[in-house]
Image 1 (cartoon, rainbow, N blue to C red):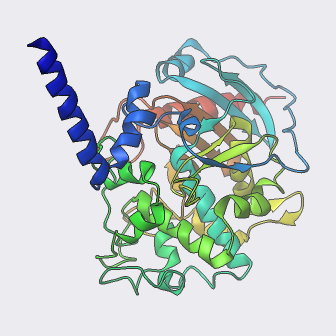
Image 2 (image 1 turned 60 degrees about the vertical axis):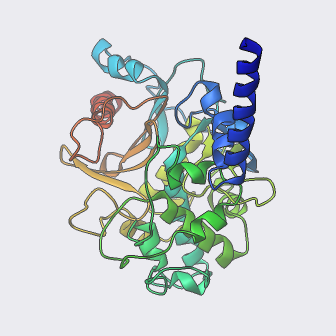
Length: 387
């Protein structure tokens, strides 16, 4: 009897597996293998090892960050350290005046450790849009997406612009749900043909009207940039910024599959904490690196201003905040990956980790941990300014 029951369970399992395999949810098999059977309920810092990647080589002329004259001379207080540790931080760095002032790693991570940036990649894609405009591949933020993707679907497909994509005002049909295995966001992480998935999401609402955060919108922008330039995103990022900014270590950009080879533009650059700070330095310095204008300063200025007054938290690919009298812009990713910049203070902080802690006020687009890290950075900044 037990043998028959086990055989029936086995047959049922095979049937269910087969049904999933031939259905629109076949990506769940990859999700189970790459994420859930690894003991996780969502993507995790080292999951890039489970996927295909395209390599971002180290710069041909790597530029180590200079060390501040008071490098690591300041220790975190017990209270400052508490939230950092409780949220399973793996890296916490502070740069002052383009020099490394404070650096601490946890959980076995170090200088060479790669970590998934998740949605911090959206800021890189926005920068690539600015570069494509600067180099004439794209006319302006107002150019229509269908000029590059004529097969785009939806009642408003002809109306959406590349600027609408960068500012999260696309009108695209999308469910931004990270923990539901049946959401399109989850599907995007595991399907082997991202372009096809994105083209199945129509522009069915009027674009350019308001901000609504959608990862698929950045993925569509990545498709535009790839078609406009004739280059894959990794290649274009390397020649535009990664190489000239002197990145010290090799990085990876996750792909949908080896066959299709499309970068997950909305997420998933795996790099180290020091190199993640370079793009923020470029933006803080108005697009100049060692005297060379890598990105148009006007584009940067527009990127770090809100497009919509009712949504002051977002510009063009960057999160924005007024905090304690300071203007702040930041890269921000799933599970609490942050590069936080206080431009007036010439101050950049990098925080990478496994968790971001409790959500806090649902009306606040920023979680409580972000305020804690900003407070720590501002507190330590006073030490960096002391002779």
